[in-house]
Length: 449
Image (cartoon, rainbow, N blue to C red):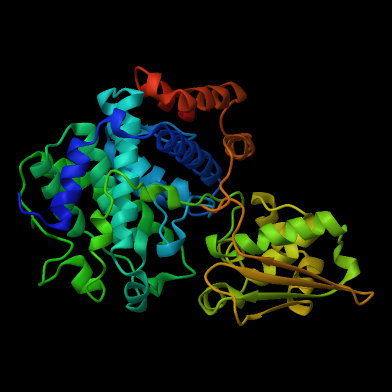
């Protein structure tokens, strides 16, 4: 095998053993799995889920794989639908440096194959670790500013690689077969920001999950693909989609420096780039006992990139409300909460919430604010200005959620979807995943009505 970034990554995945994964990384991966389950169960309330479910059901009539909060579908159907459920209500993970949501593409196909094959929890944990690490490294290699400048959306382009790595690890691929799986994954890389503000931006995630599954299953048959899909001069991902990328980031410190630690999680169902604002608003409202009637103006300062995506977006429907900075600011200050109820049609239509968002929330580009940081200033009717300069959101890799906070998110999401007993089984099984004899036990719990 040639010594190329794709080949080195394939060899890493093929040779990775559970005992080579540091304990802290194993526990972090458990947190990410648990968060993905919570996000998927919350996602059962997504407005577009019925349409994706119809597509998933049309992909096959078998029933090997469980659906979060539902029944069973085919491998392809379950991977597609579960991938969408994880991202459906905008509460899944994000790798902020590349605006990449990793879990839909990695965990959905991993769970489908693990259930079909009755894989052990240890095997599943190793496969998800391989998929997450692969995802983030391939994303880092895109040189995101140049990649984004061409309009590409990371989940659709990068996601298939993570899914292919997880499937390959579960199926015991050698390095050569895993290399072919990566070639097939790259052949399906797609998805652009032309779809921003529509549900298709989330379809990129579930389609990426399905692409990763297909890449792995087809590679297993001996199907041939490019041996260097990342850096090939003629059509390699980094040359075709970027400026040549930074391929050294794919392999630098591989196996010793775990890039999956940079994956951030979300406490609130809203755009990943506005989580810092929500963190600040909730902290300020609690500390200063702020009520909407006492506020004359709220000034939100964002970076240009975040402002362009969220600063002026309308909130005339649930999907856009989850992304709209004016609406999110208003509803958080009115309700001192941010969960699915805050984005229900009745709240979006509330005249007081709407008027506050239009008349008293001022969103602008702020000098000195970069990335997803935010400057929040709240001016009271008495002329006092309260300020919070928030560099990172709660849940960011620099301020990670605790296991207890993720469990709280799961319990909130699971109300009226799965039973309390099933929730407790999920918590116990993920927390003790390395000792779970059969992954089907976990899938039986998340499927319970």
